[in-house]
Image 1: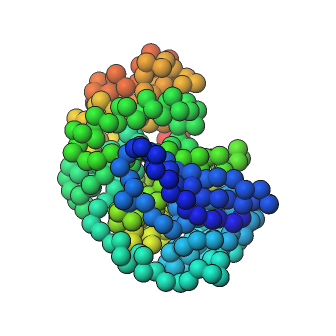
Image 2: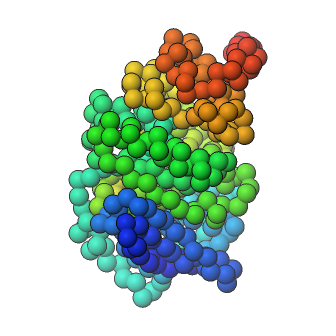
Image 3: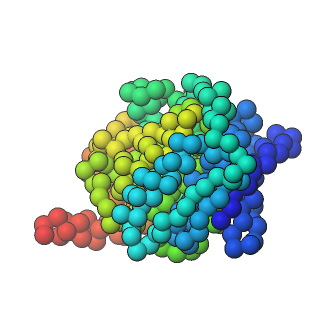
Length: 351
């Protein structure tokens, strides 16, 4: 695999960043685009493309050549601890590959030193983990305060496509205004490089895909907060879902100019849900569903019967906060599966 670029284009209020990706003598375009004001933040490096594509490369046993600028720190991490952890985690799935820079690009990192700044951004989807991050970084301010939130389509809305993505974006716009942060929306075709094979599914690789979008903005933003999908006590190897080793691997994606921060791993899912239920803005947007619009009505954000919906609904019911979110879920669908779900979980806990 050869990564070349980036090519940065401006057309009216639209900004498009593209990379040429050569795989087995065939060139494809990887692009990121936005109608939001991102021009001054766009990095001139290949870091975003490298992070976005190294998992498909490891899966396909493709060495990577970067024909462009790349962070020395990231390049070192890619050839060492990042691949070490991924291979230890899934040795029969991923292969060790060589990641090298074209010889005519120097090791000079002057560009990274010149772009240090104090802006910070967080990926935001409207789920429990995202809202907990908002609580930590905006409401209670236990971390550096956010200046931006980022919404992108790296694969989480794959079932509903562009229509669903735009619907979700429309709901997030007023939320960002209420929170007093700038919203950035970045669309990409990154998901098209992830073949339809279980190890590369978005639920397993989503955190790393989102880091790629964050690194695209490292010229104007120095800190990227990523919501943890698992707590520290659940850190373990041997699961295709890479979020279970997130606490170990995420910091190593940092570069000379952007610090990648995993936020929220100190809390369990129950603790996060209790925290989120006290945020009044979340009553207008809680988006946890994997299956919409296959299940349920398009009238609701969440189908009420996929695994994530049922877990969230059962937790909200247990803490007495379900009524606050009744308009966000298909409650009729939940009523049909509730008793069976609760009984199955009671039986599981009794064993």
